[in-house]
Length: 478
Image (cartoon, rainbow, N blue to C red; front, side):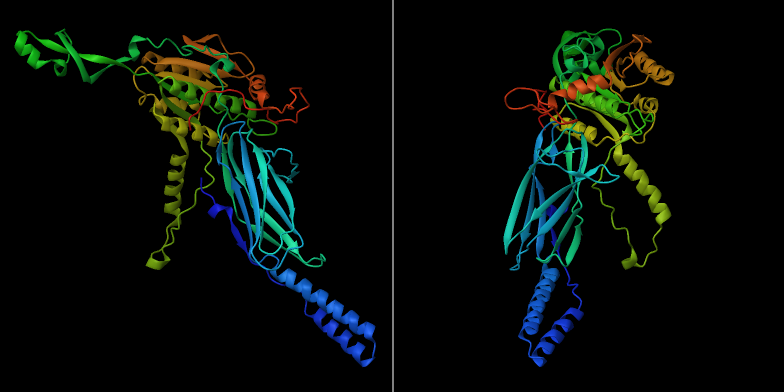
């Protein structure tokens, strides 16, 4: 993910003291000298020193002040802790009597043992810190993020507030230092979803999944009616004077094609159903991890888009060449390109890079717009490998979805529907097995191990959404 250069920014300030105060001090000193009043002279000099000090601090308080935010790692597993280091460096001889820092953090990633102030009308929270850096001093504070929410989380901007020691004049500066932390979805054993631990989607010994590798010849046999001419072993045929066919080594290709239906039914608070969505994404991640661990080729398709906050728009200005821009034409092409990049379509693969691609894609899923899942099934039906197993994760089963699955079943694909909903599904739909995963209660059971517990082993009241130590889950090997 793209970040500003190490999250660092250099600040420049300016003085805002009105010159009338210097005139007033000069008048006081002059009047004290003329009236031979030492006290008035001392008051004028003291006031002048205070104004000079205030002006110097207000002018240079934000000069050569550096703020840096670092993370121990910017990709984390669900329930993992990430250390965030905040560093303030005062790279000048002038000490700062006080420096207030307000850093914008996502509310979905709380800090351990640290209270945050919620931002108004926003899903963000404010981390408020008070520093007093001396000359050429660097101060670092560490905080622990609790990664209990899947997604790409944005940190920043940061607001700095400082001034003179008397608090007369202060300056503010906002830093455009956006950074992102990606949290992968929760991966749990398949038994946690009421799925069989062994062969949850059918017997692997199904004949339609056994293919032959033409590059691996292990022998010859007599020619049989229907054998392709490419299969004929001409040398063996010449030696035996009878048609002989090659015997290829059988290669078993197991393929899982995961179709994820992100349901966007209206919800009172979120415009989506967050628990069912997160449960569906966690289920897809768990199946993908299980499949790759067991040698399957795993593919992923969904009817929504990925959230990619760190893309920068290329500079398309052509002023230097004297050409006129065509924003209408470029905009349509750019929108099509961006939508294509954000589409969720990962063809099946069994290498370890596929695991990373799937987890990052699931972490970026958003449920705000997308096509219907039957359109995705129709678009991909002709591209799927023969004999692959299709797994549909959905919270609703309409007639169009059932018809599309029935067509794919007639083509020789094994179909499994994982129904994510509080209400039970039909036991069998058109000869297709339907597994009831559960709904909100199932999701709460999965995230329950991440609620906090004391070191003595006794349960203590937990804040909503707070995590417990990470339980044993299948390794992601990312």
